[in-house]
Amino acid sequence: MKLKVCGLSNPVEVETCINSQVDFCGFILNYSKSHRYISYEKVKSLLLKNKKNVQYVGVLVKPSLNELEKFSKLNFDYFQLYGQYENKSLIQIKKRFQKKIIASIQVKDKKDIEAYKKVEDGSDIILWDSAGYEKSLGWNHNWIKNIKIKGEKMIGGNITKDKLGELSKFADIIDVSGALETNKVKDIKKIKEFTMLVKKINNEN
Image (cartoon, rainbow, N blue to C red; front, side, top):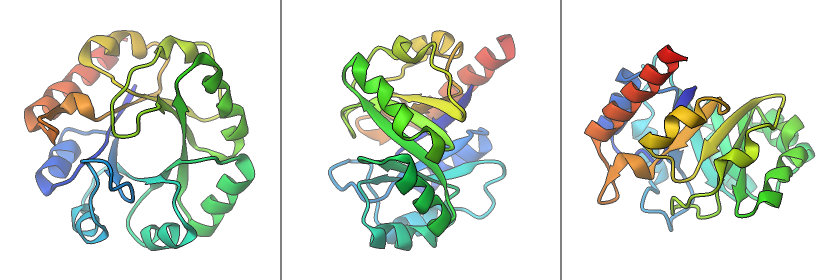
């Protein structure tokens, strides 16, 4: 089980994730309603060149072509996209901007899970997330337990330490943000503890 830490906003957080061998670092690029949003200039300064094996993820909500163009020039490995996408448009974005794609599906009800069928061929990773954008709302993660896809399965939405053991049985990647914050600010101690717990569970499996 890999780990993505999302909503990073300062150098210490990024360095901590890199040194803790987090698999993915996520940055909120164009959604200013989120307290985790950061400006273009700031994110530019956060994308450290010496990132070891960490993958950088640019998180974009219904981005315009201009936004995709602008952010494609930065050192991102993936675009994580929220919006009404289908395979054709994702494949076009992937080719044009030379980024791997995480297609995000927002889950409120069990029927929402099925949306993966529209994006599976155009995605490297499919993220089943909460419907709350910046609010870490919960949903029943067991709904995707038996789903098989071509790429990797990522799960987000109110993921806490006590859920990790169960999620490790069927999630390839977990996407965590709120559980690593204190008063809406990333907590370095929590990041370190969480990454150690993920490693422990992986070693046990």
